[in-house]
Image 1 (cartoon, rainbow, N blue to C red):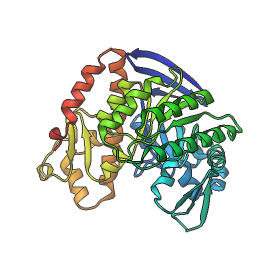
Image 2: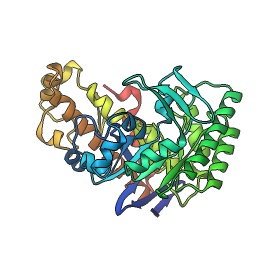
Image 3: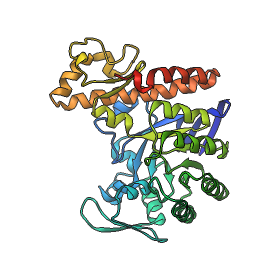
Image 4: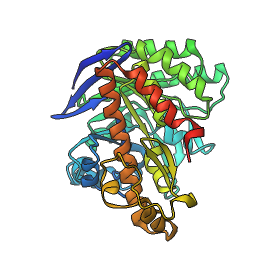
Amino acid sequence: MKFSIKNTHKHSRVASLTINNKTINTPAFMTIGTYGAVKTMDSSDLKKCKAEIILSNAFHLMLRPGVNLIQKFGGLHEFMNWDGMILTDSGGYQVFSLGKDVKITNKGAEFRSPFNGDRVLMTPELSIDVQTKINTDIMMIFDECIKYPSDMSTTDKSMELSLRWAERSKQSNYLSKPLFGIVQGGMYPELREKSREALIDMEFDGYALGGLSVGEPTDLMYEVIDENAHKLPTNKPRYVMGIGKPLDIAYAVRAGVDMFDCVIPTRNARNGQLFTSTGIKRIRNAKYTNDLSPIDEQCECYTCKNFSISYIKHLDRCNEILAARLMTIHNVYFYQNLMMELRNAIISSSLDDYIAQLERNFREVKND
C-alpha cells in the first residue's frame, strides 16, 4: 500500500492511495455496494460515473452468498466484474443494527442470521478471515458500535472491547493485507483520545473514525471529527465512516479526512431526492411534471445528457425501475464530481470559498 500526499491546505489534503496496482484519488467517496453490487448499477455505470472505489460488507457477504462461492470466482472483484478498488466493512455496524438479539462477549458477537435464523458467532478472527478470502483491497477491523446516547461507563467498556478486538484483528491478518483501525469512544473526548492513541500504537495501515451517524446531533459529530481527524497519522489515510451529506463531507475534508462512505446518494436517489449544482431537487414535486430540462444543466452524467427531469418524474410515478437507475447514476456522478471539486479547491487553496458555495446551495431552505 502506498499513500502519497500531493497537496495540502491547512488540515485538508489531496493524495493518492495505491493498493494492488489500483490507485484512487483522495478525498474520495466510496459508493455503497453492500452485497457486491451498487443498487441498479453495474460496473460499467460506475466507471462512467468516475467511481474508483466501492464499499462492500463482509458481514452480509459471509451470510449471502457465502465465502465459498466468492472464492470459486477468485474473489469479490471477479465475482462482480469490478476492477476498481474495494473496501469491506467488517460488520460491526451491521451487528449493532440487529438490535437486542445480539449477545456481545469478549469472544465476539453472537446473533441469529437475519436470513435463515441460524446462530452466528462473529469474531475478529472470522471477520478478517472472510475479508481475506474474498480478496478485498482494504479490510476493516471488527469493532463494536453502540447507540447514542450511551453513558460514559458503557462507552468506556465498549471502547476497551473494541481495542481488544482491534489487536486480535491485526494478529489475524495472516496475509498482511491493508487493514484499517477504527477509533471509538462515543462522544467523550477522553475516550476518543485513548482509543486513537492505542490504535496508533498498533500501527494500522489507515485509520477510521467510527461510532458516528448513530443519532447524535450534527454539531456533536462535527466536534468529534474536528478534534480527532488531524491527530491521526499524517502519512496514512483517514476515513470517517457513514457520513454522506455534501456539507458534512466538505467540513470533514477541511478537518483532514480522506475517505467517506454513505448510502445517501443511492438510497435517496431511489426515493426521488437528487443532488444538483444548485441544491437538492425532489422528483416528486409537481413543478417538474412539464420541465423539459435535465436534472442539472451543469451535469455531464449519462442521465442529464440524455433525459429530461419530466421524463424521469413520469417513470418514477409509474414505478418504472429505469427511474431508480437513472436517478442513481446522476447522484453517484454528482458525488464523484463533488470530490473532484473538493480536491481542486484544496489544490488552489480555495476550499473555504468552495464550502461557502456549498453552504449556499445545501442549507435546508435552498432545497425544493
